[in-house]
Length: 203
Length: 316
Image 1 (spheres, each protein chain N blue to C red):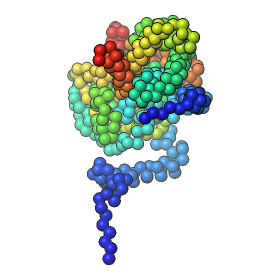
Image 2: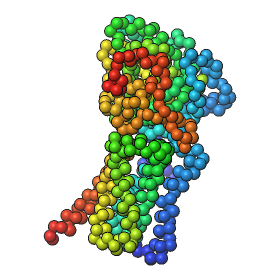
Image 3: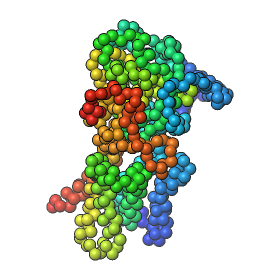
């Protein structure tokens, strides 16, 4: 099915709509925090929700390339950076919720956590790796870095794997939810591996 | 003359009673009647008409602010009713804790199977306001209604081989639907060393806030051991067994490096995945710093002597 909205429709309707949609989870959390509607343990709710939105948005970002190829919707590409930056946006909130409301800026405890607790180690590593990707996401950096930009942004696969691992290692007994994220990621990565092989094997 | 014949396809899907409901139709009617009765009486009762409106307070009290009934009953770890914190409250109505009986077995002179009413009858209920510290790093202050575990156990005359007491939760996935998925090795089992169980602090709880125990909090009868992490305080107990060997307890079997048999609250022994140094008191503003966790959850005076000479880091 070939749908091709005009540049104007994309710029003035679809993109703003998606942008606002991506802010809805945050709006809900802010409203909930102000109205005591985040349950008995609001910090846990905030951490959990922002963390899950990081993973969801990350998977959406990774779905864009296969979706545009399979559906022949090249214009989907125009949303990839926005989704990627929202991944970083929610990762910052997730990290700050931990730093502020879990550790209350106790640097000593934070460092201990990062060193000693594997799920925090991988989560923190994924967060740090997101920083260069966010910084180099604008057009001038893409132009400046040329081929290196593509190489650098392959980090997103490592980030996604660490992100799912972060969730798996945090869970006490019920692995159903992290398992679902893991399966979706596996499908997305397999598609890329398959494409890569198809492109490198001579026809 | 026109004869109207309904073809099979004329019956709408929505009119067909699901097979499971059909098979259990008598139970369905009974439950529908019972729940409408409960709803009706609940609505008519004034708020002060609690089951036990003014109980005598136990000698063990705390000056800490008591956690709200809403938080105590909406934020639960009771995997038998779902693994999410709100699941037990949402699924509470599925669990019917009546009728209920408790089997007492093992190394004792007076074993037997007792219905709940007979089991509770000999004991004077009291209110016990205890801190509850979850292994996940949060805590509450709960006004339980119950009676001394030690007094209860003595009735069954444990013999000299009884070195431990083992408790088992009901195994019935039609009443506890969380058991349909093998998240834990059902049924849930917990245990105490006999001298821990005979300490005056632990209680068998049958209520909270002066009323019967809500289903999500482990109705109709549960254990409360305030100096240990919450998962030791097993819910909805159907079996109590005196044993010579250490019971195989559920979380300890699942991850022995994370959940010890003793599981005494101890800020100096970290859980491998999080620090146990501090705790978040449920109900306090989230922007307020967390509390320092106390050794034995602040009950050292009453229980520290149970562990003299023991390495609490090794025996966590």
